[in-house]
Each structure stands twice: as structure tokens, then as C-alpha cells.
Length: 605
Image (cartoon, rainbow, N blue to C red; front, side):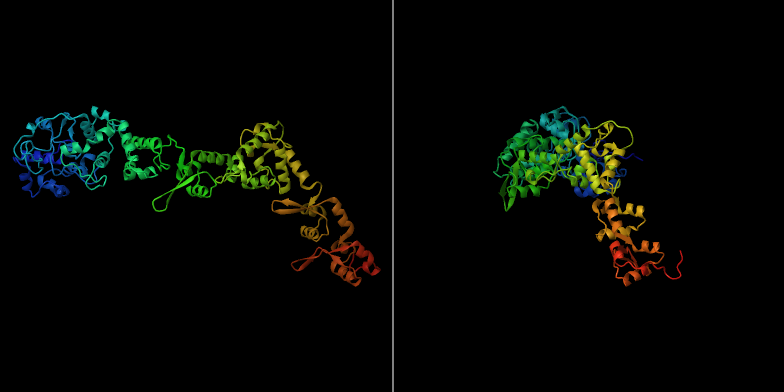
């Protein structure tokens, strides 16, 4: 059993079929394929698995070298196959080198092994080499390929052919540096786009150029690219400059048209030099007011679009458009097409706005700068420690209200007064309404810190302001002195006197006990001073206490009060019970009677 004939490395499918037909004794590849009911072309290639079976080739042997629509190998892309014309290198055929896959690529024009031109047309019959006629070594007319005229390929043809084939060749040094050693998978599409757009097509549609059929056609098709690619970057710069001068539209993308959009669609890193060069040209040579996305960050212009300004400043473009429209910032609006508006503003305006926004912080960034919580931030505001800038001193695109410079000066001033002390310390972040319920005292403490009355510890001022530490004993003493000034809260007075908190609070609300209101973490608290307590005790006595001392009951005592016209005050309803009954000393004096103090029958001491 004969061993199967296998494709050589980089051998083309057409070359393999021609070689196989020769081994089977056929002088014409078309006759060989016809014996199996095939003809070289797309229908046959789409059924390549069946062709493998017919020819006895191992599974996948021909599929691996077959052109296809979605191919990872650039040389096998169906889009760029010369399926209606065979192409050969006379020197390679003479040296029995297999027909290469690159020979069938529509844009490959030279053999990089021998630096000669590829040939697609027979010099004898003057016809293109038919893929379905002739043998492995000869044209259908009988002329051997090795007898075809040999012409030296120029450096540009060699550079492009090596680039598409992914081969290293000295001629590639003529190309842009990014393409000298790299061959992107879509390089043929880029070349087709650049060359096709350069031609004056009958359709008038750039990029609609037909694919060249022969190697000669490809050389003519690619010729205009030599000045663009081989004089890098001057040739490409000249091409962009020429396109910018074709119309008077006020945007660079509009002047460059679809050519710009299609060029920017090529995203391989090897094309970065094309994009950057285009941006450089626009920044330096475009005279219109608006250049869209074609400007390079390294080449700044005096006027920029609202979109670019938005990216620079960090706001929505709509805010800039509205501000320019309202005359709040310097800028201008150009109109084009059917109602299209293009808003521009001077770069210095955008840069100054950005600087102002960075210097004025909003609440969130202010809290982050100081390291404090939301509640502490509110208390510092209420204490007047954090001052807002005036609206008239802020730009229309500035959201922050707190000057970073003033905040830095405040923190540095507090830190400069740091001192060494012994004992426990408490961080500023912890002095809040969890540390004490006295809101007014906390505010006063913040004011004392800002004014320098209370100084931080010397070893605590290197971090955020919230981490500054203060003597805990001094902080607590300050809050205690400020909180009441010698007075008591309702809770403290209840513990001292044994009265119920509800009763004391009600008597305060009824105006029977003089007191002061003080801000509290949960609202307000009542502060009762000794003088007010003494005045209350000298004026009123609790009915329950009086009944206890008289060895009677409150109910009996109230009945006696009613009989003698003595009025009570301070009562309130607590469920079904009545609490807080008071009687004034003056009322007792008016209705004093011996019956008032007579013990209740049956009651013993």
C-alpha cells in the first residue's frame, strides 16, 4: 500500500493538488480533479473534507491548508485568495520548492526567498495561469514555469510581501517602525483600505476598490502606498494634511470623513503610530475650531470641545454646554448641518476650572481630608469651624464649598500648638455624641480646639486631623464644666431627690421649675440649677410626700383639700394613675385647719 501524499509546510492547496496530479501521472490538474467530479474553486474548498476522502489524504490534512472565511492564518483568508488565477515564482519551481501559500494572496507580489517578482501571466499564451489547467511545473499551454522571465523585485514589493507573509526581511526596514518586525492579522485589510482609498474609483466610493486579480495588478494597486509607508512619517503626514484641506467643514472628523473612522477602527497595537501621527497632524495643521477625537493629548490646542473639556474638568459635557450657552463661562457655539451644535471653550478656561474644582472640596472629600464622620462634620459646621466659600466666589462648574487651602491652614495651626503631656489621651474622632450626650459641650470643645484653648498631643499630629489626640482628663473636665455649670439634668435630679423623671420633666414643662434648655444628642435636655431647685422646694410640696408625713393617704388628703378650697397643681395622667400632684405652701396656709391634720380613722403610725 502506497503511503499517502501529504502537504509540505506552507504549501498552498492549489500547489498540493498540482503536485499530487503530477505524481498520479496527470499533466493537467483539471483532468485529475475531474476524475473525482471536482473543479478547483470555492465549491470544492467548501467540501474539502470530501476531497480528503476522495484523494485518500489523512483527515484534516487539506483542511489545514485550505482558504476559509474565518481563518487565524492571514495567508489563508478567503477574502484575499487568488482563486481565479495561479501565481508562481520561476526560481522556486526550478529549485523544486513547493508552491507557497503566500503566492495565492491577492496582495503578495514578490518571492522573499529569491527577491524576484511573482508571475501570474504566461508569457507564451498571454493568459493568466488557470488554476484548473496545466501541471505542477508548467502552464496549460505547455510552457514550463522555470522558463518564465525572471524580474528583480523592488524593495517596496519585498517589504509588503514579507509583511503580509509574516517573514523577516531586510526590506521591511523601509516600513514604519511598528511594522518592521510585527505582522498584525489584519494587515492586509489595512493595506487594502489605504491603497483602495488612494485610487480614483469609478464608483466614487472610497474603499470600494476591486481586489487585484494578478501579481501585476497588485503591484499597480499598491504602488501609491510606497510614498505613504516608505517615507515614514513624512508620507503619511502629507496624506493627512492633503485630506484636511479638501473641505471647509469646521470639524476635523468631518473633513477626514469615513477615512478617519475606518483608520481608527484598526486597533492592533502596531497601528498606534498611525493614530498618534494623525493626531499630531490635526493638532498642528488643522485650522478649524473643533477637532473631535483626533487631537493628541501631547499636542494641546487653545480651543477644545465641550466633550474634551468635560473629560479634563471631570463634569458632564451638558453642564459645559449649558454654561457656555448661558454666558457663565467663556466659549462659543458653532452650527453645522441640520441643527448640529459644536461647543468650544478656551483651554485655559477649562484648566482654570479644573484647578478651582480641585481646590474646593465637597462634603465627602472634606470628610475624607479630615478623616471625620458625617455627624462630626455637621457639628464642626455648626461650631463655625468649617466655613463655606461664598457662592459669588465660586465658578459655575464648581461643586465644592470648602477651601482645601483653608482646611490645611486650620489643621496646621492646631498641630503647631501641640504639646507633651502625661496621662490618657482621646482622639478627636472619638469626641462625639457617643462620648457625651451634651451637643453644646461638643460644639464648644470643637471651638476650643480650633481657637487653641485645648492643644493636641505632640506625638499625634502626623496623620489625619481625626487622629489628633487630646488629654482625656482635660476634655472630660471641659465638657463637665460646660455641660451644666453646677446644674443638674432631669436624670441627675431624679437620682438626688428620688422624684420620678417624668414628674420633674412635666413640672419643668409646666413652668413650675425654672430651668435651661441644652442641646442634646437626641434633641434637648433640661438643666436645673440649685437656686431653681431651692425656689421650687420653698414654694411647692408633693401631695404624696405631705400625705406620708401626715400619716394619711393622698386620696384622703386631696378630699380634705377640696373641702377646704385648697388647689393643687402639676398633675398629669400616666395611664390610669394621676402623678405629679403638688400643693403650694401658700395654699396650705390659707386653708389651714385642725381637721386637715386629723389622722384617718384606723390608721396607726
